Length: 133
Image (cartoon, one colour):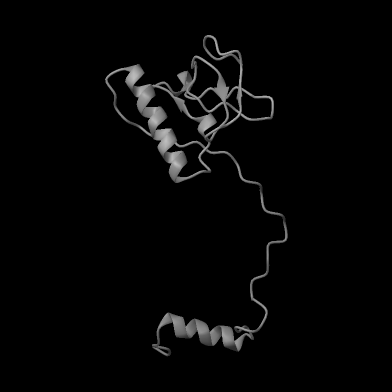
């Protein structure tokens, strides 16, 4: 073998020979086309529960816990469906629009007022019966 040194040093010598170094311009330039905006993706998590009611409670707890750990998780998009029928997904959170563009973060079909996220968040609605969009 002609060059029996580690790949790291072979690469460093090649970059040096081509004129690239720490102070020089990078060999690879920035992309010419603009980068795409972020797209919305969905993760499906499977779990077992004895009933639909308990499954809904667990799904709400999982979504809220993930949102605490990772704020970019969109609570309003969380849904629950049977594992073999994803087309029957039901929303977990209300998401009713408020007067200042806020969205209600309470569970779907909750009684009472709508409220924005955070302590002391904006409240709106008539306060009677289940949520209405």
